[in-house]
Image (cartoon, rainbow, N blue to C red):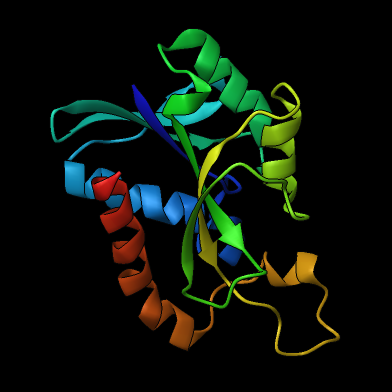
Length: 175
């Protein structure tokens, strides 16, 4: 079962922050597929199951907070017919310009704590499919990155976000 895991933080206060772009992508995908997320306590995530073409898919938004997302991934892999080859992680990347979308398999976490948790939960050297969504860096050098990612998107970014999410979903459909 193809599984798409969006990284983010639970709670209203984080809903529209840069760090939650993985959740935002899955929210839009769920709406298009006409499926709803439901809490699944045993895997510490909100899950939605749907159909993408002729393939059954699972959408997951871990509710563990970003820095321990790997715990939810392992629980999902233990409870569902999902292998790491079936999984694609969708997350924000401050090393990419805002709106840049990249697909990658393998590699390290590059300082992203959510991906670090995912990779740390798996055997060393495991390749993970991922879609990285660029959020850019703070324009003011005095803004620490950990604060920047937890801020809401700027007005201009909010206006551009639907097109970026469309681009990510197009890539999901093509995968």
